[in-house]
Each structure stands twice: as structure tokens, then as C-alpha cells.
Length: 377
Image 1: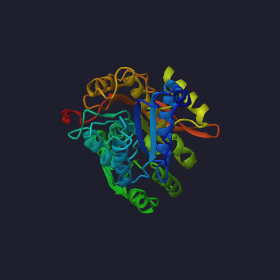
Image 2: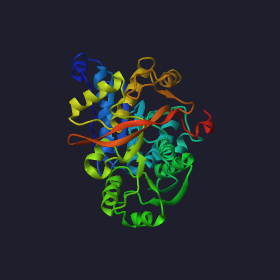
Image 3: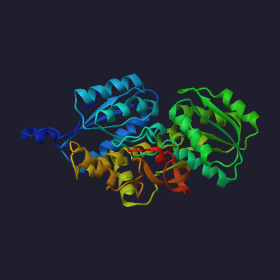
Image 4: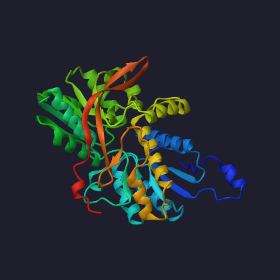
């Protein structure tokens, strides 16, 4: 899928005889197959911010990675070598990020991650041109571990897919959870049948379940879990309880507590305006991923106001300033270019016919990641 898009006032620029774009952004994201909703939301949030800026000097080249690392690598090579992009963004899944980001930054490109935050890129594998605008993979799971302590759970069964983000998820949960583990499982990436796993949970003696199963995996698990009759409380990160997923899950998600650095009811001017504008433009409520795309674009715009990517040192310093109004409120980067931010506990509720989340408290305040000390720029 090639949306070689944009821009506002592109026709006017052409009529004036000026260059169509001065800054080229290469967005590789998942727009088809499993996980497409995540990539679509990142893209739409990003493009909304670019549109709101009114700038006509940015070209965004959007491509579908089909959630395949080899496709993502091919697209990145073309964008860098043929399209000569200045900045890259968009990747949803950590295995694709690991295939693309190190090569892109090694070639002098800036990469702004609107989602994937593998631990390998936060610690020893960090790079001064790599910025994560979402979270380090462990963070929301660490918050789930902290919430589980507060809720009084002491014997959790935990499961996640067998890929980098899944491993980071269980590592993060265990880092903060103070109880015992009734069981620990890695499932197949893309798995849809969880009968065997649910049977193990039933037999484990657990008092709670923590799971990280993004996209369609989470939909399948939640529905099967609800049908199983198990009544153990579920805890998870926002990825399995986000706006797009909840409508597919329905009543099976009601009341489940999940952790997120963003929600539509965060009360600040930027977030209120973002939720309203996104809903007006796309006729749906924004998701966590949409908010991350929106913030990533606004970080980029704030840096472009101060420096050009061709001046790498100045542009990097401008990105480090993070001088933009985030949907999350206060936003700052840690020393490894990953966010320091508050992570909330949310509960799934119903508003009319729409399933959504409401914030019920703070899980971790001003939280950074466990790998920053290993990062040496």
C-alpha cells in the first residue's frame, strides 16, 4: 500500500513553483492483516497532527509492512536509498523494529518510534538518533505488576506471545510483582485458540491472571476466557483493552483493569482537543495508538521548528527538548531517549453502546525504564 501522500497546500506549492516537500518522513507500519488496526490508528493520529500544523513542507511516505520483517527491511532500504527520507517512524511490532531501526540509525537517519519499544534498543543497543515516543516495552507491564500488588493478588498466572515484546512483557510484570507465579507461558505469535492455556490456568491454583496478547490474539483469548466460566480477575496492559479491540471483545472485557500512559479522559487542553478532533475526522474514538501517532508527529514538528534534520546535532537536541504539548500532559525523555511518564490503571466500562476505559488511579508515577543505565551514547 503506497499512500505517498501528503500534503496540505501541495497544489499551491506546485503552482508557486516551489519544492513539494523539504522534509521527508518514511512511515512503515502495519496496515493489513493481523494488527492492521494498530497501524491505521498510528497513521491517522500522526496525519491529524501534520494536518493541524498547516505546514506544506513535509512529505509523509506511508507503506504497509504486512507485519513481516523482510518486507519492512525492503521498504526501509528503499525509503533510505531511493526516497531519501530524513526521518522514519511507524513500526508497531518489536520484531520488525529490531529488523529496521539499527540499520536506519546506522545510516544516519532519525527514527521516532510511535509504538514498539524493545529492551534491546533501550539499553546497550540504544542510539542517539533513536527516540521512543510511546514507552519501553516493559513499562505498562511493570505498572500491571505494581497494580496487582495493590489489589492484593499473590499468585498470578502470566502469559504472553513468544516474541521480543512478549518476553519484555513478562519480564516487566515480574520486576514489580511481589507475589508468587502459579504459571508462566509463552504462546505462539498470532495464536487464536487458547483452550489449552485456559485449562492450565484453571488447574494452576492462581488467584489472578496477567496476560499480554495484543490485537486479534487478545480478542480471541478474552472471549474464550469469558466462555470458560473462569472467574479469576484479569489484569493486562492497554494493548489488549484498547479502543479498537474493546468493541470486538464486548462484554467479556467489562470491569477488567489494564494499564496505560494515556486515556481519553486525561484532563488537559491538548488531549481534550485531540479526542474531539480525531472523532470528528475519523468518526471513531481515538485509541492509545492514535494518541502515540499524534504525539510522535507533534514531537517531530516541534523539532523542525528549531532545526533541520540535515544538522543532526541541532535536530537531535531539538528532539531531546520535547518541546510540544503531549496528549499525556507532562512529557520528557530519559537519558536513553525513552519517556519518563505516569502510567495509569484503567477499568473497562460501557458508555451507551460503546465500550471504553476510565482512569481509576495511578499505577506508577514519573516512571522511566530499567535499561537506561546501560545506554551509553
